[in-house]
Length: 242
Ligand SMILES: [Zn+2]
Image (cartoon, rainbow, N blue to C red; front, top):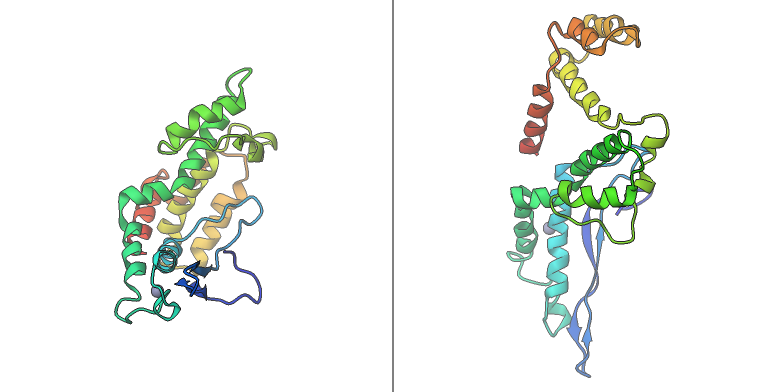
């Protein structure tokens, strides 16, 4: 699934063995290989799929489904060996699931997961004697669109941020994205190499450190109070554009 040096650079499906029926009557099972180029997490930064990658995975999985479901007796009529006008149909049909809100909600768990971790983070730092496994069990189905937590797992064990100095501030990561979107769109997007704006960013924002209230710093740079609107607009625009 993941990209690596020297690996074939396309996302595609390769037939390893077509399904067929042998002389003995036994069925030879179909075997297909889906090759993709997904990025692994970098350190503690989670790697999210771009929308185009989601569509591409759905497309290729449509081919895999066609391989698996094909019941042709002869190998040369099995797998992808269908009429050329037909061969891409299953893949394109599956792509449509990427544009439906119902299925998008089902496969967009990670952002919900950020919310889940933020809630967890707040609760464990504002209450005594919390049973972290029970807390996750309680929060998981509520936040993750009804999905129950996997039995026998403890998601808190892979959540180091609450023990390395970021206690109760998990949510601030999303706030940073909100402010960054506002800064970039308002000041940089239309003129990426503007020296003057770059210097203003340096002196008014970067140079201030922790000495001033961040909203005051950003208001001074932006010429108004920072807003969540750009972040939301950018998210909507990105998902529609892809
Ligand atoms: Zn295809």
